[in-house]
Image (cartoon, rainbow, N blue to C red):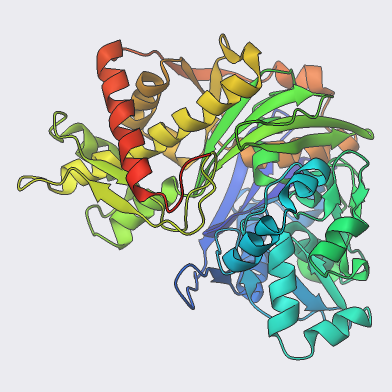
Length: 498
């Protein structure tokens, strides 16, 4: 008798797998970090084989920790880092180049040129996105133009493109399924979010043969059966969603106006807009929140490229801390009167600035500035960037005034950071008891397809708050800090803010 749903959570710095029972509780978990590759300034790559082996290993680890076998698993759900681009040979299944990661900025010149030629309005009209290296389209074009023989092979139909979910499904099913879901497809710059199909116009713009593209399915659908050779038995894959959309599902943000914000390597705030694809006038993205039973639910999204990555930089780059959990207490011990601001534009700035060429900077350094103040500035930068996103959302969607923000991701375990976030936003922050909302969302999508879990309404009742953070900072101090942040950002940008 199958007892669990296996959720694969393939992230930017690590792969994780979790077993969920019928009550949405985790009974086994596995995690492995893998190498990050930086071949040039602003370039970020992963070895797809590292991703594959880490995923298989973590699945087996999760099963072992639960004292379970693959026969106990009813279905698999997959959630993944979005936009990261893999191209492989259809015959061998071998990638022709490292995965080009969503953070990678190597195609800045390409997107800048396309924008200068007047293409951005029609790109946004069809895809809901902006012309930025963040998305997959220009990455695909770059690989085809820089790997010897790739363009010719693609034109012959010998190559397959996919985001990480697609690559994993190909491998898990032994190369029998080349599929993705709508939430991943909509992040490629190649997908028409209004008509639910690949856009020939966008494919022509980026010179991407449509023969490379996967079939697009609902987020809760039949994505194929795993090859028995992988885990010892075949299991259906019934749920797929990009990590931020999976977190939106896991946070039960099913009603228009609900917002979730995930604090992982980056930070991503998603506002559910229901059946309406709201066009942003403030440099946010119109995207697909999820697609179930053929029905699309749209969202406005703001993307911050560096959130938890700033904590990783404190640990690995500056050696200010040994473990991420040390950052909150260290920030709390800082001189709170010292006006130090970190603009973490290590790979440019995302929404609402979209400046791929600016780089990180620290402002307000004094003789007595030390690790405490820099750590506090790093954590505060996440709060300020979230403020920028929600301020833009408020101008696009006027009903956000009374909305309570639901947060998740590794950084939300920091009490200091969440309190400072509530203070800067001047809004209550709800942290759920189940912090693994991204994996939970993938598990729910898989379980829902086969009746292991109930409908959206039933799932919503399972969401439970762990703590509500209430704003307590005086308004004049909050405004002063925001003003200082905006001044720091303006000095960092390579072009005026839109």
